[in-house]
Image (cartoon, rainbow, N blue to C red; front, side, top):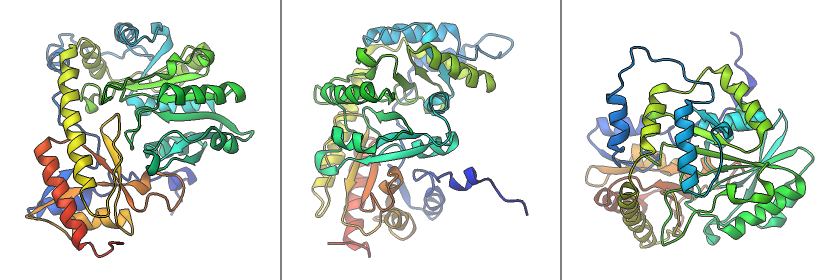
Length: 399
């Protein structure tokens, strides 16, 4: 029998989705499963976006421009201007979600064998994108004790080698919810400038900042504007994960022209997704105001609930809609599977994502889980209660 590729062998399994069969089996046995494993909000997609698809009148669904529909890119220029990010439509490559945009960025800026530094824990699929691109992730640890703040500049410098080509950050962060400050981003600017690296900045959760904190974009770092590649998406902003539209933005013309070649090779991004995304740009501010109030209540429900559980700890994040919680467990992979396979409380259980999958360093995150607070407050209260009861009887409890 022919062998599969080495790249296929190295491609990591999704820690977010690998437990789906166990969840489906639990549901089939009559157990209600609270899905806190995946960033799929239950917030309604803006009606203006849905209507744009419903009212599509053309006789043919055509290819769009490989960089994305010009009308959509022009709308994005207006959106970014409102956020004090001043670009042109030619600075944008639209992708099939932020996922494709990240692949374009990695493949445009790095050769196989090159290295990218990423503070961990980080979005699990970065590992997969790196394998796909033939590059090596060099993780540097952040700690739950600091709320997962940016590691010290010395930690970055220790990790830099002749093969280092880029640093990547997610801000606000998935999976931790940490919001990097202006000061922290200026530390990154110093490193990027000193070593002439790319800074790939995943900012898809820009709108979700709490407690009066504001998002500071990497595009504001004027000293390295030729080094910065912004990654963005409509999935979370407009609760429209399924439209599969994201983008990469850079003022570096060579990066954009190179990424366009990769974009041409896959022909074009989704037409209906772009139609919805373009219309969504006109979503009123009131939508985001209501969403923020809702997520604020959800965050508080989860953080306060977990911190009341004996032996558990959860920092209070300033952004996104995720937390990483430390639990008194021996192994997060075993625990998350056990929750679905062997536990229920009043015919209810909770599906979490093992945090081990959000680290690149083997053995890290074994007593941590990522929780997506994407359900309504009542469901979250029930889910936290399930977690509390589960920890009372889990065979691998550590204290």
